[in-house]
Image (cartoon, rainbow over the protein chains, first blue to last red):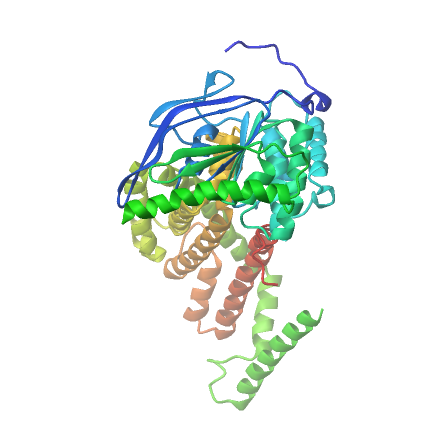
Length: 277
Length: 255
């Protein structure tokens, strides 16, 4: 790696919208050894994600969609196949690709501000003042400026996920990986967050891979929806959703898309039942 | 304020019951002195300096031994949690020795170090060390894996991971281990001081012991009260603020 002279970058530079990544996943397979023998979580899965694209992975639980997300994050290694970001193989976790988990993985020993700062403190070449400015910007972006001194346990579920989003965005990653981030929230809070996420995605121009089992959610958020089938985890079908944004989860057009995707999902599970019999 | 008044009232009633029992003369005054006699002893001992000196001697032993135990226990606990080899060796040893009441170290300490400060320190360290090792190990093992994963993606690794993620996440366990270590150290030190006279300094335990030798019950009870007060103060000054902070941050408070 080439060593560049140490340069101070300012908060303004740090906040610049940077180019999102493109992801290339080719022939990725992954086995898990469980209590009931080996499970083929992913079977030769290939998927390309364009720069700045919002892709949703849907499927029943156990279809390997979360495994694929973890592999893109670099938290797990595939048994075979390659995963590349901008042409470079992914060898481990890194702040170019940040993850937002289903359970809020916020650190209870830090307050809201400390959590958002955590990833920024690991970025060299920034002054503390810059880091604080950047953290403030993202808290503002998710609408939680007033809560920067709050303890994590004092927040509602929706607020926690907003902080998680701010924490994941703060180091300015090129890819945002989201693992059912809204699954545990009530419907009203979720709808608000769909709006916010679309707005933030547009403002910050990220490539997003979003895992969910909620078809409507996928149709509402994704440019493309990839339907997975379980055991072995494979891509079954994919749908382009070309509705204008911001999208409303309750719109009729969206329901039409969702129905189509649901059919693909169900068609699959009926098939599975037939095989089981 | 209301809580304070209630507590004060409670202790006043206790004192009254004590005084009433003394006045009823059920037991000989040699066995049950009055609160006033105990207070007079404490005042005299405070004025002539014996009490202060003994407290300083005892507290010095306790603090030095405790800090050594803590400084050794924390890294040992981390090693135990990190490497299987250490878990099988140090971890097993710690688990075994923790079940050994620390006063059982006194005979060995006396033979090794003689009637010296070193013997006392050794007993205190043994009382502290193993609890801290085990609590640290348990704490680290109970850190939810998701914290580590989240930190990994943000670029945390090795030392940063240990100091900024794993240790803070394990803090609630570590603090309760520190508290247990403190309790063990305090008990074993008292037992050791009562059990043997240490030539290098006269601690509270020895004052208690000589109170018995002289059949000076007011001294025995007076010193016991001092020991209780020290224990209470340690809790209120040293551990309470720490625990309050943890409760506030983690949201585990019932208050």
